Image 1: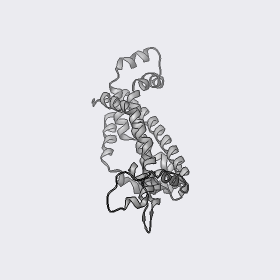
Image 2: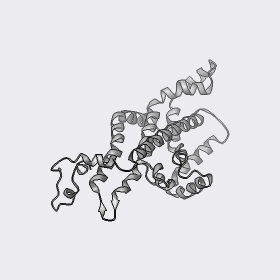
Image 3: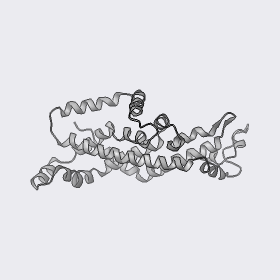
Image 4: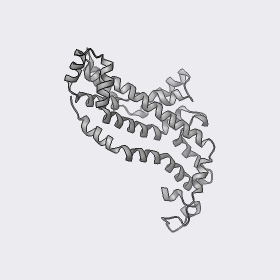
Length: 246
């Protein structure tokens, strides 16, 4: 992909396969950045990714804490019903969600891009399992000292669950950054489109600009690769320590 992004378009269609370009065409990347509203798409992707990640972490931490520390009527049944929704393919929900957002007047807005993805059943399940591994004695000791539930969550649970929370954040960042279908469905104007939707612009009636397409793809995925490499230890630690505790 990277090598193709540095080739001249004619080299890609040569009869003989050429792995390395004769000369590095760095101007391919400049052409991508000069693309109409590319920087706007980049800005949208950053805003949407940050907001979705923060929104999911907020709802996940509160829900996971409630399911792991509070005893209330119907808790286990509610959690089971929540988990059962993971069996529903996300594609089935596209049309109902679109109709709902359309009635709310949210189509082609940041609200449509962000709010539907600010909660995740998998994230709640994952963090709940991690919270269950934290000794209950800490909670009881905190209550004896007069600590409120919210303060205990912020000062004890969240710091101890840092690997799991970082893991969820990384996974959500990657998923939100690479999202293609949903932004394409709920946006009409170019001003609201995100980076992955830009890839369709390199197709024309006479063919595909594969060198520019690969350059744009490299720009899109490179930040995620760097984030994963730098923070992969947190993913391994978070997954290994979360366990599957009933």
